[in-house]
Image 1 (cartoon, helix red, strand yellow):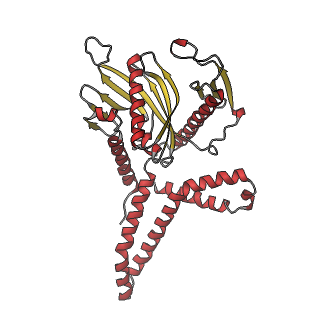
Image 2 (image 1 turned 90 degrees about the horizontal axis):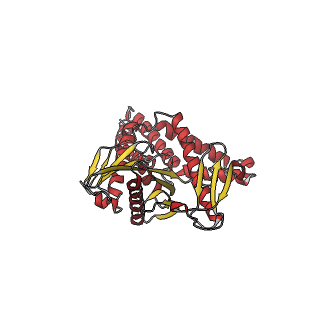
Image 3 (image 1 turned 45 degrees about the horizontal axis):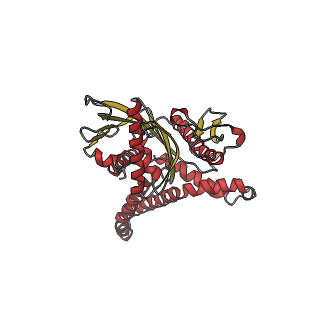
Length: 357
């Protein structure tokens, strides 16, 4: 972890130099990219720079404490406790700033919810998750926007894509990525048998435009007629948009708006988020051991949680936590489990960072 902080500070100082480089100043687009990256690193880098300054001061005071001069020794012994406390306080602040990974401080993200095994019941569960996150967003005063929805005839969702905006939104919602399993008696079940079905959730940080340089020549755009459940046409104009990123093959389709322009704008937002997530995953794979014990890995294939309705029980398998208030959680009170996951990450980070003398 300390190596990572050193890397961040080194990159920040490199960007500081570029901000006064005449060659960079002469190219507005390059300057904007440098300024944006510099701004995103500044809070953490400046805090770590301050931490290192205090550590150097402690080293100097420790040397004074070995002096043959009794006045110097007394002065050092008086200063040392305050400096050590300052070091601990800054370290805790660094810990909080680092929990949740590189994108923790982003205020925008995209969430994709897809029905898994279980047919109509899985689609209804996907809708339950959608409503749960929407209500949670209302509690947290986050803005929630539906980018795309593929409803079923029974009122469920085959898939639904949401965009969230607000303070701490990605830091918290990233822990929802993974497989969600539900155990309950479906309304259509005459014999009262418990069925198991599933849905997957993927939470992607929404990048700034300068972070993902997506040009029209980088993707193929197909226009087609939108259709709804059962295949009937929603409108007679060709307004639905499908984008295919040529290099990676990543595909995004949007048809919710009657305007082709609006569907294109939404599709571009989701495509950029998926490409950014793919880029992040490639970097993560190159550092395979990093964050291996942390719970916020976002692996969609991993079953992270079970929702047992008959027992009113929610179990998060990553941290072995069980709460017997599923009714409250599914109604939007997601915060208790989120806090437990963040606390777990914080403790793992603290252990990986090590202590002080």
